[in-house]
Length: 210
Image 1 (cartoon, rainbow, N blue to C red):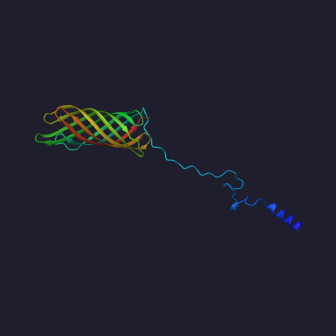
Image 2 (tube, one colour; image 1 turned 120 degrees about the vertical axis):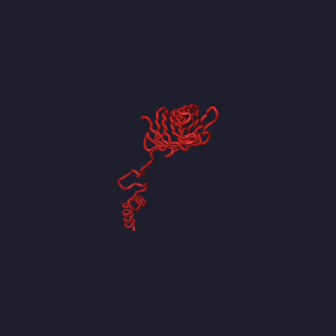
Image 3 (cartoon, rainbow, N blue to C red; image 1 turned 90 degrees about the vertical axis):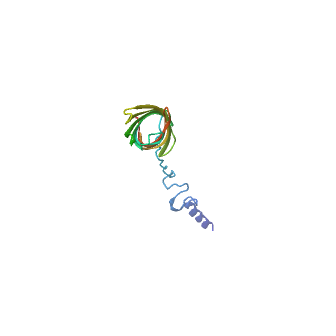
């Protein structure tokens, strides 16, 4: 009997502790034989952040659009095609100052015959950029001058008045330093007798200076 017990002890001693191995050759802790470092999952990729305007850089905007007289305008005029150019500088990621130059050409006819009106707006403007993702809205407000060159009776007359404008828009970046925008503005023309009102809509491109 003593010899049988000694034989069994030798057999179990040679097998080592039970539970030291798990099925499939995987050892506790998530390692494989010959590799003592646990496997770690690869980090998830994150999307590139949308560029945010930085302080102190210059930008240029060019656009085209339509202007629709609303009140206190010549009744013969309908929607007018126009162009817009803006040069600005950011003050911080939200605020910017820009100079808006806009021109529209109105034409029509009334009891006196064919008439036309070429309008030029020069408006220093404050811009506030609202945080966003792919589409970034912004607000506009400015005050400047409105100049008109009239044809027809009286031919060649020139008119100059003050103009105030408020508006909003939205831009989206195509690549770094270049974006597209759509914009709407409401103008108030302060003449000596009345306050003219019109509404302009633009679509255009925005370039950031390098």
